[in-house]
Length: 74
Image (cartoon, one colour):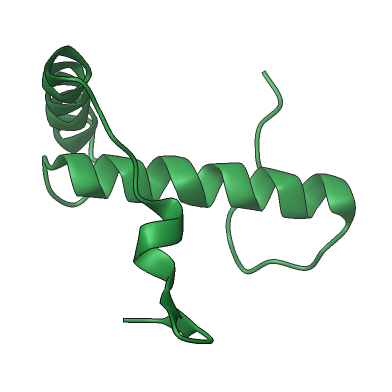
């Protein structure tokens, strides 16, 4: 687990989802899994993908080098 000082970073990026949002995330995760956009049909994998895309887009716009993908602006 990565830490910043004494704080766990997982707490900084954790989110609370309603039951309905969780079910919707499961449906999206399954769809993305079948489209081979993620490696497993789990909410955590979907969140990981979403967060990495958000961070990569920010880095790209801010001119910060990244080894991630180059975002498509659509």
